[in-house]
Amino acid sequence: MEQGLALLLPLFLGLLQLGRGGPLEVEPPEPEVAVAVGESLQFTCRLACEDGRTASVQWRGLDTSLGAVQSGAGSSVLSVLNASLSAAGPRVCVGSCGDVAFQHIVRLLVFGSPLTSASLWTGSLVLGLLLLVFLTYRLWKRCRPTR
Image 1 (cartoon, helix red, strand yellow):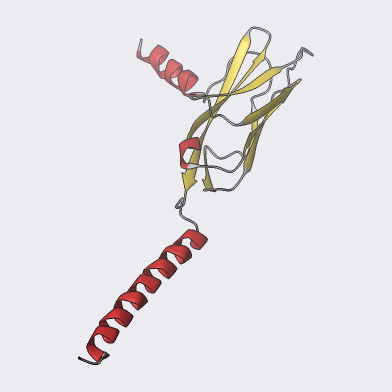
Image 2 (cartoon, helix red, strand yellow; image 1 turned 45 degrees about the vertical axis):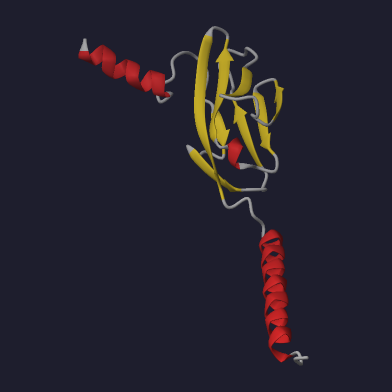
């Protein structure tokens, strides 16, 4: 019984793939891929069936903001354009050769601040101008002649 469970766990984790056909080839091959806010990235997933059948390959995600997906015979390309913090999360490539299914999970990590250097520079400029106005007013109040 324990041996059966030991074989099922890798199957559910996508580490063990049953059936005919090569494993899914995913680029980039890392299980976690990091991208900065605002950058773009492409994931490619391919599957070749050994028995000459046409492989079906598709990217899936847990939400509707998966990205742009283009699928063809035996391959699927997922493009994440202008990554935002909400784009982070798992992406699953699902492929099949006939009745045999394969899957590969890639976790997309998005890092960085949504604030750009231009917005920080603008904020600093506004604070600097307010400080200058305040100090000028205080100086004018002290130096004006009394009547």
